[in-house]
Image (cartoon, rainbow, N blue to C red):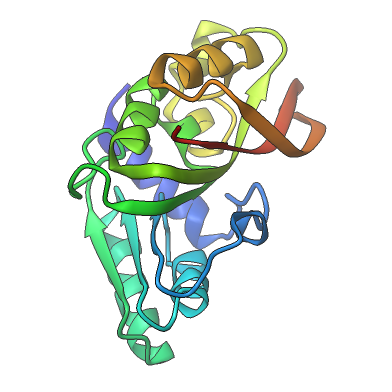
Length: 206
């Protein structure tokens, strides 16, 4: 499965506004002066909202794999007149920020696109300050998806082919250091004939 195929299809899906698991920023309880990162930021909608919430004194960053989304996010930041926001082109498995730098991380239906989810959560753990937290909305399943679906770039880009089981997902969180996880909301639905779970959850770096 080519990452370039996934990026191309992901960009098309994102431009069609099809990739949202749903408004999780409300659960992050951002405060003025905090530093926050939006992983898989797309056009930066939630990044910009975060930037407003951490004013004055705080900073919001967005990271995305797709150049077109980063360019659009930068344009949206200029249009919004926000100065306390920045955007990175890159991988969630290699966040370009120093250790213990962030107060909070947010991600909305993006981590499922990455095969090694434990690596992403290790990076989140690394960049969070002690006591820092994340809120993530992502998808998972009760039962494993067929291998053919997992290897289909179109299924991955459509926000279901990259889903792993709840057990696998929780194992990835624990292996990264996030032992206590709070679930804010969960929705079960059917996507292309497969039973899916959309879950919004949080944990802290203790």
